[in-house]
Length: 65
Image (cartoon, rainbow, N blue to C red; front, side, top):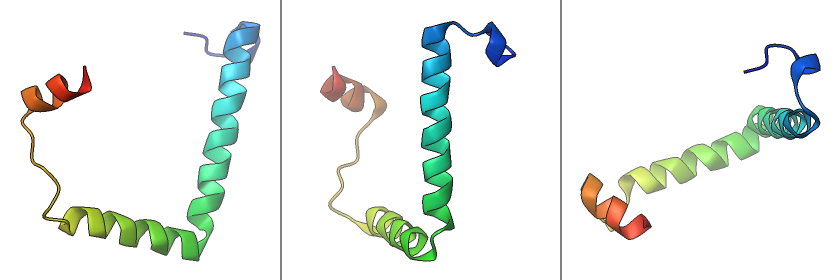
């Protein structure tokens, strides 16, 4: 694993730049109180939804193959 950007290949550098942009956009979104409240409410609804099926690890893996 490269420790400095100068050590990255062109492909690795392109991927790292995309990751940097993604993190920057996520940080901006989380700084928005309205978006942050919407995300928190969405997570609460998911946690409270009793219709979500409960799967064992094996059942999940079978469904995702």
